[in-house]
Length: 333
Image (tube, rainbow, N blue to C red):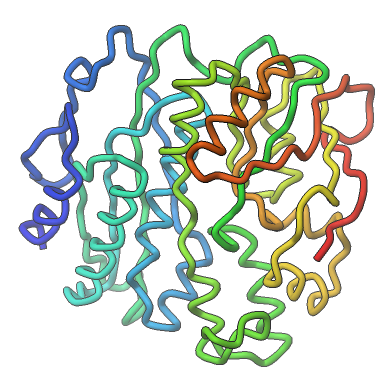
């Protein structure tokens, strides 16, 4: 398995990475990647309950891409460029055909995020996992030049909140999803009620979007970014709230984007309020970028020049008690 993983890793090599794939330990040379005074940023990730869908359907090809994107997107919150990725695959007894598909997905995720697959390990732990079960953990390292670290401390009232589209449900909200699917007596191989041309499992397993290339371009070229916030656990509300400075709140207009059909079905079928949706799901937006109110135009230009369709969804406002994230409007179809 190590030799096969090494073959996948070779496809993701980049300046500074170690060409040798020796398992769980590797090196990286930030100076070879062009950094002068780098700060190291690290993030860990798992695949959460989404892993249960991959195991139940036997669709193991994309769950590794989620693992990479979750960690690489987290590194972006400090303004860092994701550079290397390690994985840990735990199982009861290794099924090499399954492991091969998982690692291939990890390598594809590395390619999409622009990181080098620099290490990994498959561990057999009999008695811990049932036949066919496994778990995944991922670790991403990146660097940022010392003066460019995020979040910036000069965030202020009026700074603009931009939203970037999600690729699907990403990797969070699966407690609600599993409850809804079970209540409807649906199988993951049944047609998706909101997209009958694909199975429910295929729709739910659409990988978490890799935002590193597009966010990296804005960080390099616009010099306007004050915060980068991936939408993860806690949905829109929780993800944004935990990143805000103590003196500021976010005011967000829920009617400023269209909620995809998948999330409409979750809300309708699960009997969820708009607020409950924002507490569990990304609702169609997978990444938030807070930009200087005086440099919004330059940030929008960088995004649009790369084919992105950013949405201005709100602004920062003074915090005066109450909710840290203040919603207006309603989620729309």
